[in-house]
Picture (cartoon, rainbow, N blue to C red):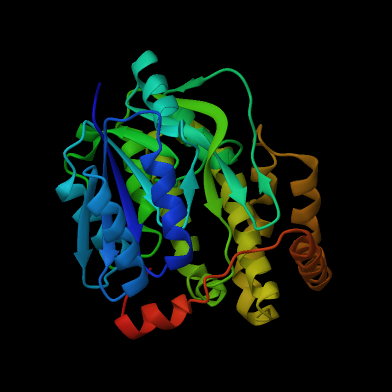
Length: 341
């Protein structure tokens, strides 16, 4: 039985960390080590994590001065001794058979990475899926999945990796959205990836860091362009899928401005011009659908009307989806520490 190293980042997640650690330690796959990288100024999380570490020898307690997410992940990687690597965020939790399911899929398909489905986890509802039939993917097919967004994206925490994939790869300290490029590099090193279409990871939806979303919006868009350039350098026949993905990203950028009351014709002109320039190429993708075509024309021809629709739909969504809140002002914390999250 191979050992799995589970790297858990824990900082300012006191209300949720107990549920997170209990879910990991109750896994049906027992040969695990749990590397808890804990910010030592977070007294509540420190106390809870130490309590678990005193009771279960599988926990490796790694307190440290508060730092960026990338540095914390690198710290966990250096301490890991497992054959396989996985990640769980300290405010999320997992089904008790998630690791066993991922290990079985990886080994039975002789893959380098296995991927599981996720739940969007709200206070009043969890939204996920469960379908039969594992899906084997080569490098090109994995990139096509990333572009379509139908099954999974470039998150670290819904995947199990062979340890050797991380040779010569580490997280870029001080970077925003650093997990995307690292995850893409890992998928491009994987000779075979397998996706298990069953939700088993609970991705907690919180409104605590909403201001950070706007602050990082342009950086996120820049990362999307880098990701797509790397895809086209390897697989130029995915050109139309890349165009569709980027058009949707630029549309999302405009929607962000509307949601945070920052939209102006001057500020958003470049985003709308990009959509206008590339929308017809995007429509050649086999992943295009009627709804996105309508939105492309709508945002180009009537952006203010499109923005009002965006705000209205968000308000309706929030009425039926109750978000969590830890009471933490993440934007303030990271600004004070000079950390890009």
